Length: 443
Image (cartoon, rainbow, N blue to C red; front, side, top):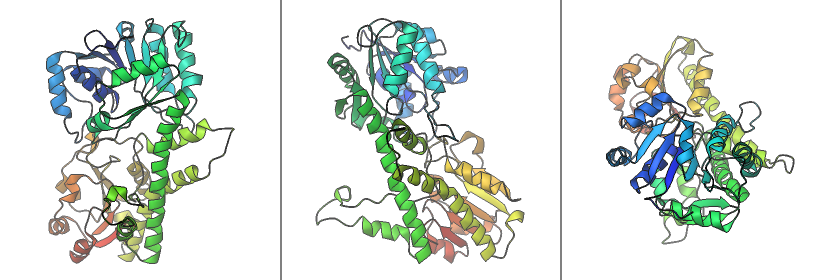
């Protein structure tokens, strides 16, 4: 297949944080793009020029306007749209089961089934979703061949090119990050590379299906483990009376003269109130699942345990603060600042705030959640804070970084407790203003 923006038609399966910006960028590059999604409301929103993604996403609104004028991108719920596509890119969610931590591929399998039923001969299918090692061979290939009646490598091409995205940097990451392409033959490899060169400026590395799967799950498991170390350091610092943020800065100063921060010999990650998002809480389990029956990993599951503990630790800091103030938590108004898992984003998938809310729900306290980006919690900050006895900061949105402490003191009632889960507030200034302060790694 010769890739040409004038003659190659692309279908994107899934129009969320991955599929939507990818569709926009290919349309901007001149390709005719059709987006397929099960949600009729999302399709209507996109087709009238709206965005299913809120939060601060540099360049996204401008790109939507530009693509809308070109008329090269439309969206539909009709799976027969795949019949006209030369290339189908799959970008659907791939969560894990809460109890077993095994892949929950309902969305992926449904997508592959509909694509297979409508797949044209000589088409190229690319999986951008993050999947457990072995999924390309044992699930993706099997379903597509069964449903299409065709054979991979003979009648159609199949590759994986896992996304590398983070809310707040979607376009920047797609354009500038290096990508890993997994393919089983040279023809498919060359075709995928020639396609992504239209929207990716980064390096396009090539390898096998399984290696690409391991790389994506592995890089997120690496981050998860590193964050778990930072969180354990925070707990150690609390126990020994040190400030983890100063400790972190000094650890990361282990470098040679003239080196930049990014060339340092040590790079301790940020500790915090918990790990969320669609990637880190589940990609570690996808990697572990891929090795099931072969090896029993130790560090990765332990890292998951530590990171999952952090919302409970935040709750414990709150409880300790009420005991310190000799006040009853059951009679208090508690305001949780931030429901999204990341700052300046509306992405609340696997948010650690959910675990905290469950713990707060076991008390009789009045709990108010405020988040400037999450639709359900877009309330006035001042109105939410009025009459509060305690606030818990769970997401480092810019709105919270600009809070005036004297005004906050006037809005709140005693004992005026601040639990800082993201190192946003100044401990010295908060204490000086008369609050009880406890921060993760700095109490």
